[in-house]
Length: 337
Image (cartoon, rainbow, N blue to C red; front, top):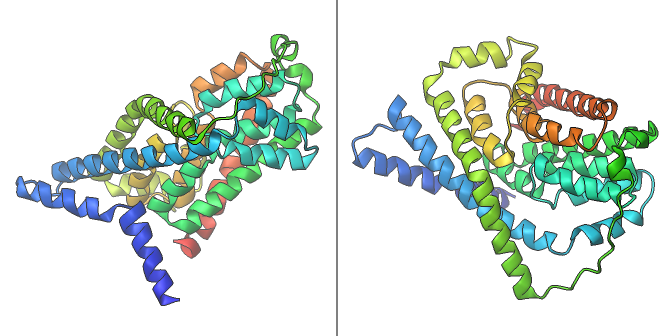
């Protein structure tokens, strides 16, 4: 057992966490006369280390996820989902959402396509919630920062929100709240050409490049904000606002995440810096969920597809779920970290 723990610690710290890169950058900065424990040196160290780590992990993860996703194009996904009914369909949709490496804005066109194709509204919403909130990439990235227990529970609770939210929307029978142009759209059932291994590799590599170009600015901003928080904002400020002393920290963090637009890759460095400064685990995770699921740009785009009543119900379900997850992590933080 001790051997397995040693192997796992090495994998988490040196492979996922890239601790070797942290040490290498620290040594390089010292060679240039910068103290990595000082404010300026620490900010530069945080920025360079997190940028390289996140972009490398992003490239590897998106390649793997995109290769898997090549087996699940929209038409095939629609056919798979069409075979299930009730809560089983919601669970399947939520799980399929985990293999789509998309932000909320990228998931909405797929949601519109599935809805136009006649899939149950609750099923499509389970997909819409899970796709940006939890994916295989978030699982690995969270493991690299917070450990496997936090990562697994985060993904599991995200799936619970997706399944519960989709099921509730289905029970409320809100089909008339979908805009008419989507309900009356004619979905084309085009047979999916079987891809060969080389074509799947090419597809995955292309999606890595396209995704990297799209998310790089947000990762850049996220790492920059994280570097400022990590080295320039006094710890007592963070603790007072987002620590044990403020029972409303989770609500504040969730509300702060809504106006932002980023995906899991852009929010990780901010969450990492907040946690290091004394913010509670549930606070930083609720912030991440709010940014990835309820960003203002995605809500504006979704409004084009659904009417205000359905948009409000969707937002309320996600917000309540995110807040409950945040408080839950605050309670169990001492047991899992």
